[in-house]
Length: 321
Length: 134
Ligand SMILES: [Cu+2]
Image 1: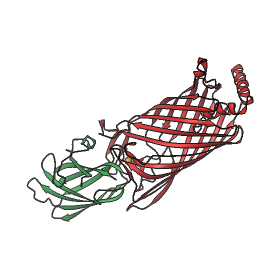
Image 2 (image 1 turned 180 degrees about the vertical axis):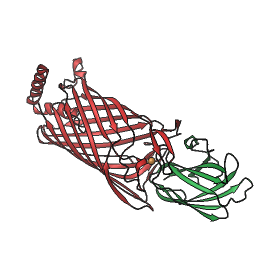
Image 3 (image 1 turned 180 degrees about the horizontal axis):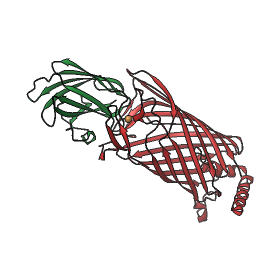
Image 4 (image 1 turned 120 degrees about the vertical axis):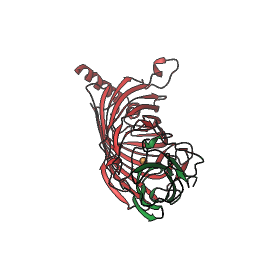
């Protein structure tokens, strides 16, 4: 084990010393773009993210977009996150714990602002293949290899679910109410020394749970399983600066109540975003700003109650070997 | 009114088995499957929107005679999301077979069902009215 750690430390030192942008490139584009996930060249990370989400529309079951009228839906989310390597640079454990402040002002109802914990997550991630980060050279097949990371994670119903709400606007509903287990893979390919394409896909099983209506009647509700995909392009400018543009897509299958599927309840949500990351003090302190939104158009989404624009700021402290 | 969808379900049927798009149904004269009741629903506002809503219900029997003194309970439910509302709608009997439901709170846009449980003497039946809330 000690030998492994030593070689990892040597490797990391080598990467860091070869310069700068190259070292930074592979550190930036592998993992560290996700909250609480340890970047490739680091041993551990602690992060805090503050994000603000403003609802501006909705998409119905036929994919028709409509702007929100007479409704104000604002969320501010403070997320604490962290990750640590597990004895070897290839394995890591990471977690997120959100705290949500939600404001709802809906026509005819008393406006409400509520604070509460969101759904926490815990993940395990393994690097199974490594990119040489040498740029693509078709005459050299080994340069075609990407970074491949596999992950499994759980989301836990630590937030308050709708069945426990006592606020007419449900501003106090900060969680999904479902246990979720997910697994997926992330592929990162450096096409040049400074540019990477990152593709992520995951499948999530959301477990059924008992829910009660206001009249006391209970049902066994099974949310549909979920597929998430993300495609990102990362450009590393220099040792301190990098930028990304990305798109995310989430699909959920039909839900069911008491074993009976709800027709047309499957959902589709596609967002676009961009981020800019800066090392305040390389390689320890990193500040990332990002913004994303649901395009206000027809046909792109399906069954999205609130489409939104989101802005976030993340401060993270990386720990090196 | 085109945005108001209505379906009927017997008490034994789970609410979520309803067809979400029963095109062509005459929403002014919705008959229960048992044939015991017929009801007309008028939402306020029409179509329903996110926030506080109300509903006028005109209840009659198989011979179109108004039913007075019925006990009506309404439970809003979002079948695709597995939640209802924290507030139980209030019902008032206006007389002449007319009833008014207030505090029907739809806190998000999307497909909602109202399970309207009607009890007259010892006969109980459910009507499930579905709304595409904007
Ligand atoms: Cu909902």
